[in-house]
Length: 158
Image 1 (cartoon, one colour):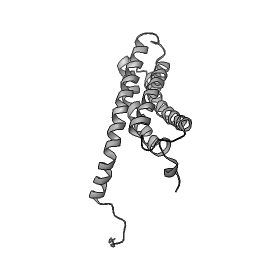
Image 2 (cartoon, one colour; image 1 turned 120 degrees about the vertical axis):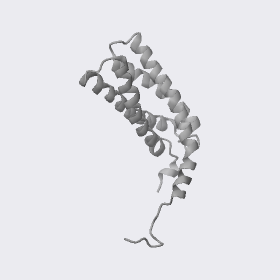
Image 3 (cartoon, rainbow, N blue to C red; image 1 turned 90 degrees about the vertical axis):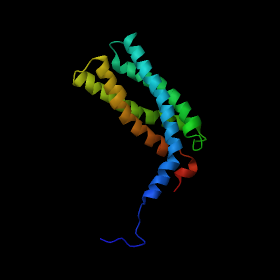
């Protein structure tokens, strides 16, 4: 198969330009995410060590809920400030739904590890919920935020 001059081709320089243009947004996403991660992991471990030692799933749900508030404020006013919706309630609802998907991935990882596989130590719970669940949830949330939550009405029209 030969390529004709009119065939679509993605050059390395085009990919590099796309990565460079997305770098500030990705850096901001990472910074806000790191802060929310600290709130989530710190809150989870504090709850697990004190008032919820036998309720690991609810401790995770509560820590994620608090971290979600931190993340929404950070992403709304920093990461996606140029593309946020004028309808704040709709944006918040979509953000909560996107975070619900991320929470299901984190809590699902924790559930499988803790209750199905029987890994019940604090270390195993942290690996399942805060490493594996974090990776899966972060990937899901970034794309949900970028393509669903923080879209201006102009971006939504074809």
